[in-house]
Image (cartoon, rainbow, N blue to C red):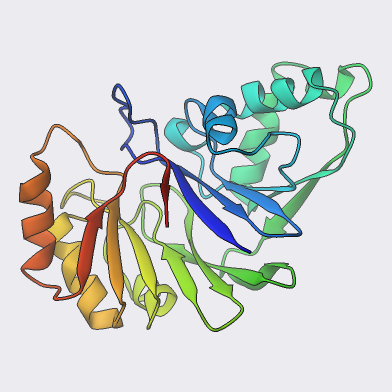
Length: 247
């Protein structure tokens, strides 16, 4: 039985009770984290899982709110005596910078360090870069301030969840979200490299999704205002992403 959990839902500035946006996907075969912001170890534990169970980590792009706690996550896994392989997926530029970040802490010299495999996603994206019996995950580049990927998770039974990551409206978001059951769409605002709640509603309608969940938003903005802006352009169900919400 698959489970998709929003571990954090905030934009780049976390708030009390709302951490940076990162996600957890569990199947019977894999436990997959998407990004690694401010508090991943505590949030994975609060979701009823464990950092020792994490098989894969997807890094969508190299901004601090998405990779800043990578050294802490790795150190936590090491201190908890992890022995199994961790696969880390991302664009070449993202992985190269992530390795440089880890090298500041001499991570490869840690005694009895667990194995880590870095899997490069091509700049043009990649279909099915993670596959198990319950789901496949595909990626396409989106339009942010640095190279970034959006994701589509397709489950058995033809269900699908799309995560836009940080992006302004673009063609590839429509491709990723086409007829998705759920679109997790960032709603940080109508600025370069980002999307507003109103734009998110338009994307959801144009892509024909069933449910829209706004994520990576600023919770200083009134919740009803965000929801109303999205609903002006989308007639389906609209929710605000919250920490620990099970999608």
